[in-house]
Image 1 (spheres, rainbow, N blue to C red):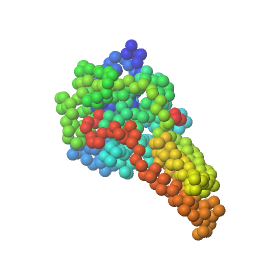
Image 2: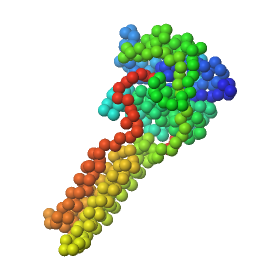
Image 3: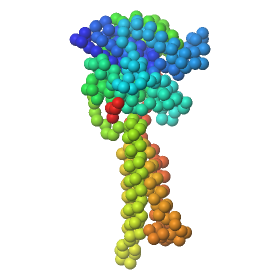
Image 4: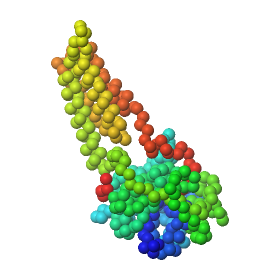
Length: 391
């Protein structure tokens, strides 16, 4: 069966392909499978270990060129003849001009790993998600893989480029019905693993690791990154089949720009409409015994809470509830701003004063309230190992 296999490996930077999947790549090549390695960036923001190559740190493009040559050498050792950089002519959605995705870098923030503050607009994580996924889809359409392999949902160890590569590769694979396999690092705790013994090709994996000289120091059975922490060269590489499970709306940052703008405008208009309707009704009251209960005010505040909190819960962004809050608060302010004595719609009485303040108070609480997502809840807090249109 191996001679009919066509496997697409999607990696973030040069060296990732060998560290995480070098043994399986060599094994598949030996078995006659068609292997394509797709590298998303050229590792422009990587470290440099050898003293005599430190000059590369002064020029990201020079470092990128050097790392690309290291990658070519490593892939030659592994036997790969089809390698592509994402965004190049053979890894770009039809009729789109070639582009270059750059390394986003990584720093550790309060929520875990994140792109560096100075990651440019051409970095992988800053690119439109649909564009990244479409470019990967172009490679799928060209190579017709029987399987797509990339990282698990945490990107192995949390690097934002790894996470973006995984998300986009998985989305493209799901759209075209291609089985997706996640790379699981040693000790990940994942179940249902497919473990591949790569002892027979370990010498080639070791030689491929050694080709990445700027990034790695390699001995007979281990390697170290620039942090100096030694790790064993995996003799067993682990993978997990990921089945498509629809998981609700596409995250806000992964939507197209047009979709984000349309959603923001729609929620802004929703806020304006709510502001007008609730302002008209907020003065309503009912007698309960001899007490006039401001049911209109209570009802209006309850609907403001429901609207803003509902948007906050439904979407993984503050943009939509924020837009609704701007529309709502702006409308209330406009309807109450004609004179110091109040207006017909918002008179200068206790109920009117409360209504003028309440939407702002509710918006502050709702927008300030933290949202814990599965991704942020499960993200590692410190490094352990390094491991179109489709929306």
